[in-house]
Amino acid sequence: MDLIIRNGRLVDGTGLPGFLGDLGVADGRIVHVGGRIPGRAAREIDAAGAVVAPGFIDPHTHFDVQLLWDGQARPALEHGITTVVPGNCSLSLAPLKAEHRPRLVGMFQQIEEMPDAAFDGAFEWTWESFDGYLDALEGKLGVNVAPLAGHSVIRLWVMGDAATERAATAEELTAMQALLRQCLEAGAIGLSTSFVDVDEKLQPVPSRYAHFEEIDALASVLGEYGRMLQVVPEFYATDITLARVDQLAELSLKHQIPTTFSPLFDSAATPDNVNRVLARVSEQMARGARVWPQVQTRPIDISFTFEVASLMFAFTPGWYVTMRLPREEKIAALSNPERLDELVDAAEPGGNIERFESVRVRAVIRREDEALVGRTLGDIAAERGSTPARVMVAIALANDLQASFLAADLGHNDPARIGPLLAHPMVHIGASDGGAHIQSFATYGDTGYLFRHFVRDRQDFTLEGAVKKITADTARIWGITDRGLLKPGMAADITIFDPDVIDRAEEEVAHDMPEQGMRYVRHARGIEAVIVNGELAWSTQGGYSDAHSGRVVNA
Amino acid sequence: MAEATIERAVVTPGHDGSAELLVTIRYGNGGSGHVSLDAGAAERLFDLCGVTRLEDLAGQPWQHLTHILDTPGD
Image 1 (cartoon, helix red, strand yellow):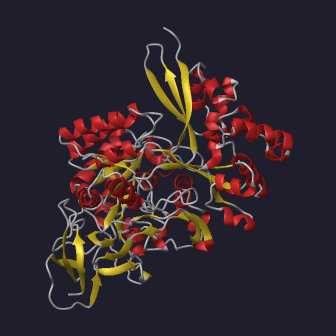
Image 2 (cartoon, helix red, strand yellow):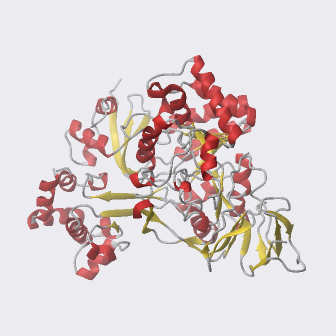
Image 3 (tube, each protein chain N blue to C red):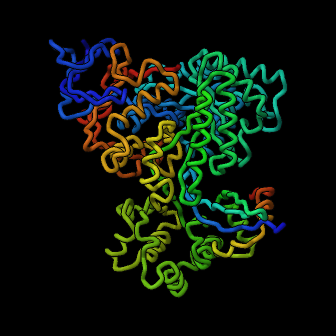
């Protein structure tokens, strides 16, 4: 045996109670689960006191680009994620003709906030076809990758500039079907499309020009392989989302395919949204359709700076009007003591500082202010004998208006509503957006957040139930048959963690993108080891290993 | 039938972590609907309505919204 994990609490992904025992691995596969395994293996891990679970699967990521220089999808791997699904939201790096690369880069930068450095010299474009992209990943992967093919790039390949002008002709539909078939043959786990996203010119992405007949035609190809259709619906409008649920249900039933849409958010501003969507999903599931809404575990934060007139300042005319001034006038106004007093009085009426007290400093440009990053304005104000609003203005001015601030937990943030929602049998936990929005917030650690808040704190899930949701359930929904369970014959993707500690760490700034590019990250707490296809990929003691045992997986 | 009007507007977090404006429209027949605006569109709505406070959007005619949605910003 290559690996024996001893004395762990085996939580096998079925949802059944965990049990103590050993787990054995040989040739990248699980060969023994439970009891005491005699003899010795080449590597042994003592997991006493820890949970041994199937590796977690993240079904909504945008690691397409990052995987080319970081096949471990850091820091997702250290959170116990052993399989990622990139290529969501109609965007993938293949199939893509060389002439269309600038278009795709623009879309990625607009939608996923990938910086220039991520594309400029960080890797060599060696491919056009889908299998060529997978070849480019060959030997680099530390996680498993189940890639979607993007509808927008398929459309771009076949229609060129007309992809953002009109509906497809019958001949173009046939060509798109053939191209999708090539992607699926090469290893794509499905197709992604979007009804929402815009490109760098704020124009609809190519997939949005498709008539329903086009999506139906492409879904028929998915039906030949039984593979997934992922959709971004108009999630901000309940009635339209309901119509999309019905469309997906028709496609699912007609072509016998699974479908998933993301995201589905809860919001105090639209409190009936989730209930109405889930009721419609339940009706369609009862008909036999497979329409899986993806719900993220983490709350949504708002980031803002003084450079633009964020709606965070629309609470009083004084602030909003000031923020809309031209830059130099804005600086002059904020530097005027009398004007500042008026603004502070409006934000903190009667000395009530709660509006900005819990806001955190996210980023600064002055080196001497770097120690402020991560601290709350209330904390800094107390230290300086000032108030949060006054301190915020001071930091903004000192940093040439380029300091950024974070108001946390402003949406999708009521645990009493989110917990039962996540535990709903027809909800697919996902929508992390891992690898995207990297300069706005950290998209890592949603699984740790799940265990911390909805298993330990609120007990919306049993430990076993939460593990099942992000392993076996995910694999079943996506048709991944050899992962998601601790069972002999399954791929040895394994996450070992302390159930009393697992969590996401605080958000922090990292300069680990190409050319020291900045992004926000969260590291893991309570994860002890992560094993991918039988190889130790990450551990508390050793960090990331040199193993590149990840593979392309599909249904 | 009475004209549809903006019933209220609240700031909500968008999918990408930016602040958005969720506008509730009340129709003449009593029904309601929502429109979500990004910061730029919200600025144009404030200008079209001639207001500078969220609260003052209430009661404004809904046609301002269709104008914004028909004429994307810079």
